[in-house]
Image 1 (cartoon, one colour):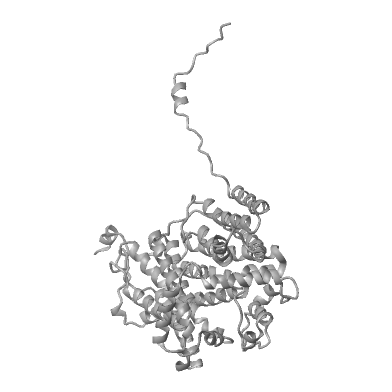
Image 2 (tube, rainbow, N blue to C red; image 1 turned 45 degrees about the vertical axis):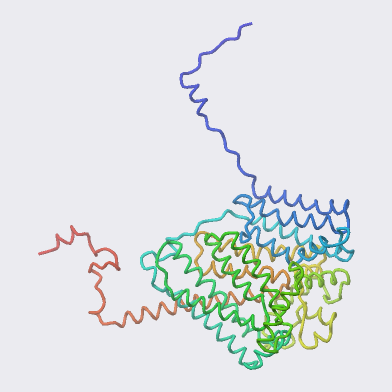
Length: 523
């Protein structure tokens, strides 16, 4: 049977050929988060079949890699991307040491105590992966028209001077702290004694955070103008380098963290602005940090015995190190987590106590001498009373604190809150198109402490946030004061020394009226 053939319009074949095909939309962020949540079941399933902590370790690695794979701008592993950086810092605090123990163990298995602690680490990895995936946003290019003074790039801005003054204030606070100890004693005391000298002097030692903010701002301001291909005010580079030199005082006192976090803050600040840092240089920096950490660990063993003795001890420690991948600090933090999970010390009287105390500890000790003890000090009282008697404490990882407060759920909640509120969100704000240079520097500086706070307790990250908030507020107020002072000095100038509004000046814009109208007004 013949089927009727209807005539086709003349433009139909062409229209059919040129009909646009609908592009596939990428899955929504909620769908991606649900997929990552489904991935959280892989660890327990593998652990059920493999046992001895092997399945949970593999599942933890998959979870912490998921945010980079589910990145809003497309899959990418870059150490300074928020989706890679935040999970990596959490991994260092809870996963690095057990992974090394697993790889070097006989039979590829973890001891039962370590396997139990891995359950707590895995709960935190779930919270970290979900938050980092949910908050992921595509990178934005900075608004250079707003951030870079195109007309007069070499001129120092009011905010530049204000930030430098805040950095000098930080130097003054640190100087006052050193004077309170005694200059001679400061350079001859042991590593442990230096830590004890900070007790009750948090206001003075908070000067380090003011200095770090000034360093990050100066280098970002320098790089932003340089990236635009404009001449750079050299005062910024000089000031930033001088402030960076003051951080080396921490190296003399046997501390390796402050210099590492400062360099990391500079890297994060430049990365969020769009300055490309090659992975090769990042790899070189990581190796340098590893060598630097080993050397400092050897130097602090004889700290107080003279500079020559410290250098000799550092070189000897480097020569005797057989496996540089065995990092003592990470082993110690993991050992504390294993001990807390298995022994369950009674240092928290009710659920959420240390979270509440974290806010109460913000009150300066001179104002409240009986303020609650931090969780690390309470753990020291239970673990080593002799150390606690002198005001010492142990590194209390955030995963362990959450576990002590509310079990596995508490670990997931605490790691999720810290990952999102204090690390992921600040990096996203720092990378927003219209964020000012001060906001970018302060947010990146806060996020640079990610590992240090994952290995610490909640009160520590609150102290850092408050200190940086004070620094930002001081910069804003000083900027307004400098601007007001400059305007007042300008107003005091003689009238003949100031250009009139009607005059045509290159730095004041165009003439007061169009040329045609001005010609018509001539007599």
